[in-house]
Image (cartoon, rainbow, N blue to C red; front, side):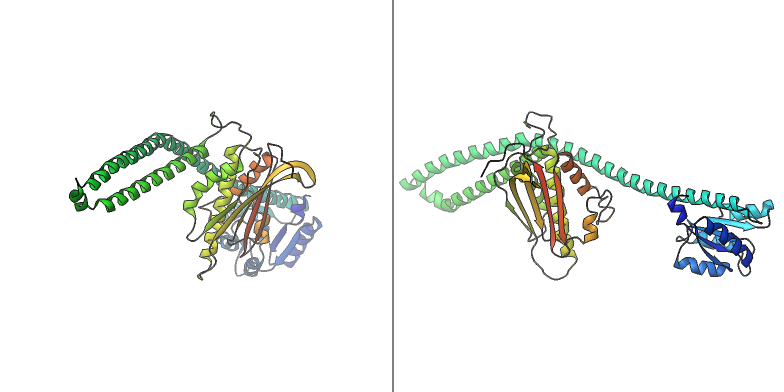
Length: 422
């Protein structure tokens, strides 16, 4: 007999002690755990304390017969999934049909035949176990479906972002060029006006329009427009780099990525999502490229930084007191060894002072479908995907966290170039 069947608990209810004794002996000899009651009402009270995996009910009992007990079990969300087998000396069709109508799954007639009892019990325990597995698989499939839908949305968004970035690039270049030309033209006009003002030719007219103040204001407006256009141009360039898939000549090597360049791209996208007073400190030196696609590296960094921001927001939401400002620090280093083995690697560490994780949450952080967020916001595949991408690149992902203090994430990736010797 399988181990899960040996450990199965079965609750028996019959107003005849002899019947209970016979059933108990049959089941316990087969290594089932049993509990028994002479009353259906007493059984219902006991089940609220500890649920069995299967119930065997006598049809005729005082105060509350087996049909009523079964209907009571099926009316409660906590007990309706427990299979109920009826037993009775009555084998008329009417009694059997009534048993099934009240929610029973099987019907055993007295006197008991041990092999038949065990066969029916084994069958319904197996069916219940398979049903539970099916429900769990269905829940996971729904979560995967939700993730796939979200993934497709993100792919579509990526295509849209790439299109916007591509189409916006030319007009932005035109705006920047026009601003440069406008600045040069205004500089020439200002030179002529300054000469005329010095000669006194247009002094009154220029004083009337407050030319000196207007000149300064034009400089400020031009500088603001130029800086704004260049910021947007930089953001568009970051979007284009982030949405590249490795199929264009813009990516020299799909299996080698620059940590500083990809980090700069991702930071330009996440800064707008930072909570108030939160800052990001970056200490990343010149590093060798790492053996992972730029797209995967960007996704990993984006996911980790997004988790940091969520953790800081969760910390702020958990307290009404004005606490320490949010801080995300990013550092990187290269090494010629990994765990004592000669292997050039690059390690990137991201620390936050967010809400942190307890030991249980930390141990499951990279498990599929595990998430501390609202199910409508996440299905628990972010760090799972990160871990997979890092593992596929022959790297490692390490997590450390303390509740109320923060979390540290370190990704270690093989260097694509030789590490310079000290």
